[in-house]
Image 1 (cartoon, rainbow, N blue to C red):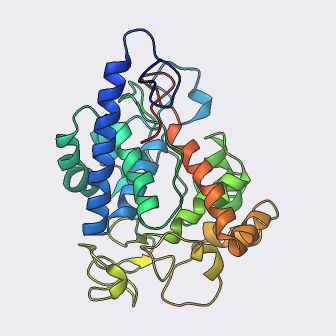
Image 2: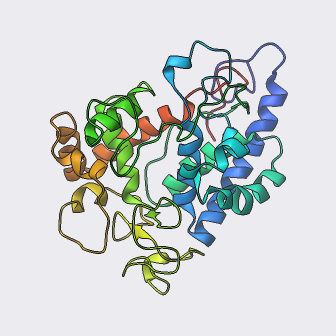
Length: 313
């Protein structure tokens, strides 16, 4: 059928014309995101926003009608989610960075725009091209999950029904197994810390706020590139470049970076260590694994129209 847009042919109320219009809008949105990331160096916060939108998913609720299982449904915009502690700082991503783009592409759902911005940011910063599909429908659960929604804690005591609240490996597995993921996914997705920073005035996990910083993050540091916000503490030296330096440089004694217990455990835990070592020695292996794990994360709980999704964006 003409106009099948690299996905299964459509039928029902969502036809070829609607899908073609949405794909054109998605292509425009991707171009706008690329321009935004190049100008403002805001890729890390766009990745974080999409992750935190996806992070409400719990497979134990997947039998419930959409959108009650949470996930990549755009619900992070609600007061219940955006005002929660784990999402501190993300209003800026939605209001300052994404809303002007959404205004230009109203056909694109918020759920799609967030996930597109995340995948585009990874690619724009030098990372892999992620095999994304689009067409997500926005949703707000009637009975939303309570904060902190499920993404990993950085420091103990760790959340979840754990045998040991001080065990970062048990905590990571509790979080990501709820998403239907495995140890390889955990290590691959942890590698996204190759970009971005932690802030005292957001997560409270480091001493550096937006007025301070390290040699790599303080105002005037070349590593900031076009970022409007200085400060914080990064996991890597070149924290606006998506590569495998998170793995390659961990444990090298650099006093200007942060390594949380949930990072360090990847080097030693028997289930995590083989993947860590593989990604440390092979950026290609990391990119391939990350692209697949990111795709999984971006589809958690999502409902697509058309049902097969729109690809080739």
